[in-house]
Image (cartoon, rainbow over the protein chains, first blue to last red):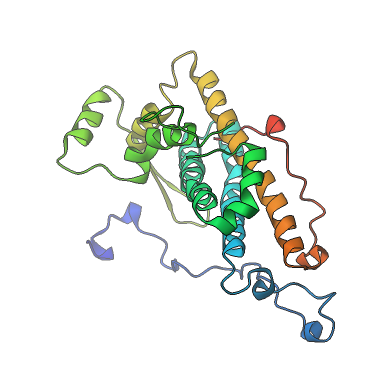
Length: 133
Length: 143
């Protein structure tokens, strides 16, 4: 690995470049409101409520939402790259989308092989014809 | 759609086919010294080898290796100079978009069913008023 002093000047980052140091704080996920314990029926759900410990169906639903997160983060950039003829962007987002869709086969396998998940999701997947492996 | 179904034993499903097309050049890097990489380079030896280094947003260098983009796109999307290139791109995008739309629909229904199953008030999930999953037939084209 070359040290920075060996890197041609044209490839060197600016002197003030600090990888990993964002210039602004990303939008944070909200925390539970302080009064959540007093009026639970109106407060935000917690992850612990939505995905109870040991609930395999909850784990499947969490994985499903992880997949959809990953797919939707790429949908708009993929479309923009295609519309603007950005080949580099098209390749990147196509790779992202297809690898996510390929990984999603595990969700279908889980719905076939885990009885509780099958009872919950079998009809759902069949109705949407997402398919079997 | 049945995109995950193998039509016959040993025949890849739609998703497996999409993945196989791009795996070797974009997910995994071909083995250095192996015949696959050598053959890939030889197959596209006639293409121009170009690179650019420009100043990107924020002042850092934007480095692009055109030969990587050229070989990957030729292998995955086909030759951009062929008259049916756009039609192939569009077809691939429609397939991908339909699968994405189906997963989105499944997710929306699954979250609602799961919340109901646990006896939780779905309104406590937050503002979901904008989540109207598209029908698969109306799926946007993404690739």
